[in-house]
Length: 327
Image 1 (cartoon, one colour):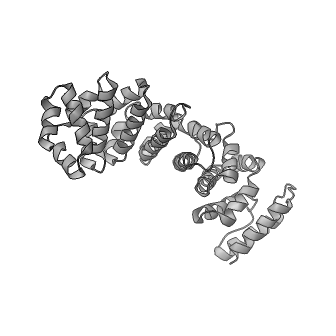
Image 2 (cartoon, rainbow, N blue to C red):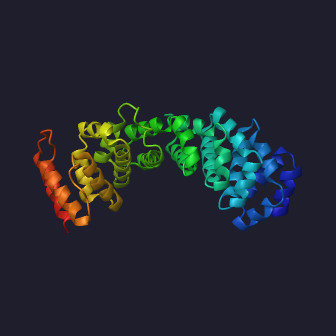
């Protein structure tokens, strides 16, 4: 079977190539690795450039199956020029099944560290940022696009390009527009937290950013809340004087206190750290875990020196947080 697939891809007519590409996708992983050694990547990439949508679709599926689980094939495929072809497909294709396949294929290729710089050196990052903001793009394609950007942004030198392409704004729009307990909101907030970790000033000029993140803390899933707290912590740590007031004015306290009580383990830790940053604790020096608990108790009793009063529900949350901190 493998010999027939190779022969038809290398020397068959277009109909034979289509059949061979379909057969290749159905081969076992071991068989696919075997045929990948036979120079079949070039004819498959050539098929990608066809004006016929069926040819494009089956070649994408075949290439995706070759790349899946094989770092060597991922590198081979990118070296053979696949990234530029994917860029052209995503710029012009209107058939959603092909767009989804191209996004999934790009995600797999971007998972290989050796490919990341090559992918980032094209206009694909800017294109992906634009695509994830399109209403007509399916949720799965958006998830794959966000995951690809996440893969690329694990390299520090690529983060500035992701930021300059408008990713922070696009991600905030997704978090704002979609159900904050959805997987899409979780993935968008996760990527945004990673970006802010490397570039904490990246959301400072985006109107409404703090409000969106506060809403995510209030309404999101446990993971979404964790990432939203992480983003605000990064922003506040970077420039406390500027951002502390903005965060407080958006009413972050009830949601933040709730996360400090019943969030994820990481979420609780970051929420408590952010609470300390948001309060006027300049006169305190944290020496150990116990003194930190005492500071939180004192800070939460005082709440704000600016005269902020504690609603009953918030007071209950404060008491519960202090109780759990003390155990």
